[in-house]
Length: 338
Image (cartoon, rainbow, N blue to C red; front, side):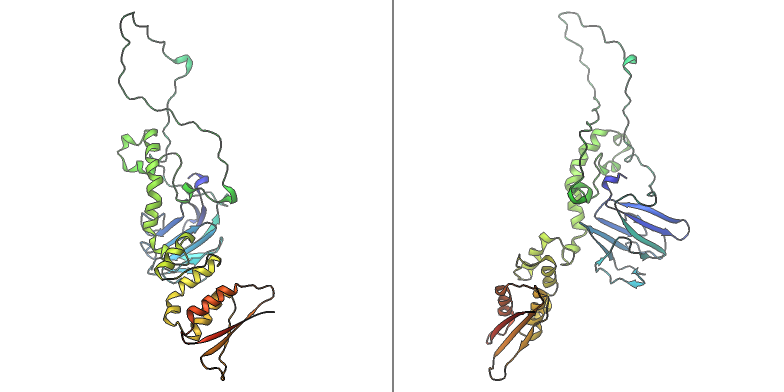
């Protein structure tokens, strides 16, 4: 495994053989009892599709795929199909195995390498030394066209080119994030052996793999796009549109994710004190005080007590109140700073 394509390392403590280290080379990493999981743990206490690691930038999530014996973090069983934010070095249990992730820097133990296949072996081109090269053929007599040599000429290896500097911030490149190799396509393993030895064909198929792999991973993990806590930021507007929500781009990303996650309950209880209070709390970060004066029927006062240095957009707060208050009521907004 090329270290440049490695996003992280996963340490696995086997009950009998001790600890081994495996590279994580793609953003979606499945763990289970059988192939085609990226990490195969051969134990009857491990489900066929047991758990999934999802790497999104510098954030990592552990998802239990509704396994029979569950996935445990600190002796607490994870809720199935609910992403859990995992930190580097945090130990989790899958069956009898203890696992933890390490950053993509050099691991403390050498990674465990799978047996080499024909795809993993770079084809070697035998070069003839200059002193052993055969003498050139005699020139053709005048008036006679040169001989025609019909056959397949082997393509020379691609030039190495200048070294590529790592991306800013240490983030993986586009191909690295999807686990796409940079020398030959993994599609070669599906071809007959005679075709697996040609370097040009591996580079040719690599162009198709760079297009299809992100699409395949998106389809395989589309359930994560429907979860507001794990969906990419660019997909939040689609989820909001499906729920008839208009997200304010000025809101922080975590608040936009939260309001989408609670949209169903906010809609169900719209027009109540709870809905108005909860929606304002998501935006401002403080629980508002809602008063209903006895001498002013159908009127209420919203008091926001912000901490020192706190600041909110008054127009945004008023839009939230207008969207959640009963239609026949009036209100007064009072924003105070400590």
